[in-house]
Amino acid sequence: MQATIVEALNDALHEEMDNDDRTIVFGQDVAESGGVFRVTEDLLETYGEKRVLDTPLSEIAIVGGAIGLATFGYRPVAEIQFSGFLPPAFDQLVTNASRIRWRTRGELTAPMVVRTPYGAGVRALEHHSESLEAAYAHIPGLKLVIPSTPHDAKGLLVSAIRDPDPVLFFEPKHVYRSFREEVPEGSYTEPLGEAAVREEGEDVTVISWGAMMHQTREAVDQLDVDCEVIDLRSISPLDRETVLESVKKTGRCVIVHEAPKTGGFAGELVATINDEALMYLEAPIERVTGFDVPVPLLSMEDYYIPHPPRIAAAIEDVIEY
Image (cartoon, rainbow, N blue to C red; front, side, top):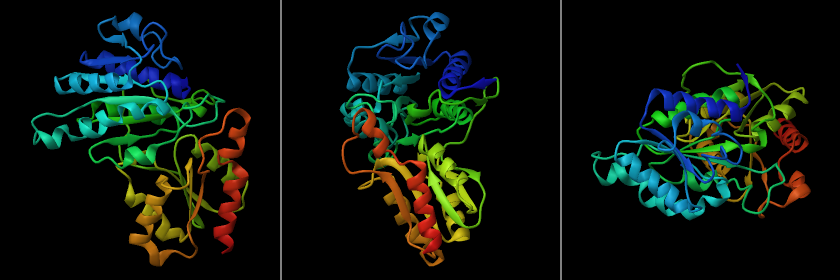
């Protein structure tokens, strides 16, 4: 079927709720309203009020409830309406979800998913556009997944629900409905921790994820440069092998993300490349990122988010170095 990311995610939830009656969906407005972006539409009518539940507006209670359900054998899928509201639940993720396996020496695990739309680009209000993946990638024991396509969104969400440990699932809302692609009927999985090489090339490696993958590919299409484009898909675990193999081949690298530059995940990628592929580099690594300010409101977003001309200029800089 041809599907958007929203439709693919909804299909994945239907598949897993059909396959495993331990799968429970809950969060603010996910039941009667079908979620603020309608990702959970029709789930209440299909699976009933015992498996699809609205919750109070309390992120710490939503994530804490997921941890409790997971340790008692359920497969909870919790939704936080916007990732900018996830920090109140940071304590639950750090103190409990990510440590259950380690704390109990494997006696208990927390097989749970926390879904949340993230990133800018939809002219939203304050606290609705953050891109804090680097902060969550810093937590051992917590996986962090970011799809960029409908096909991957469905396959990665199915994998996340079936994973034996907690997975934070960031959904790029800027491209929630911006395009459709073929998504297989029925259940399938995409591996967590495995990047996708979207385009093969020899001149420069360009790395991105989420909504920025589309800006990146648009920039690459404007250039007469043989770019290798890598979509990380999983921030944690990171597919170091694919990144390093590509950089060793091209000798040049550009990293694109919409989070602020300082402390952004590009810094970790630069360190990884410097640790293991420094002698292959023929130019300094370029980072194309958001700026070190809160995401601006409304039309000023266009100046904040990396756009194709900025990305193309960075690629040309490393080529001409």
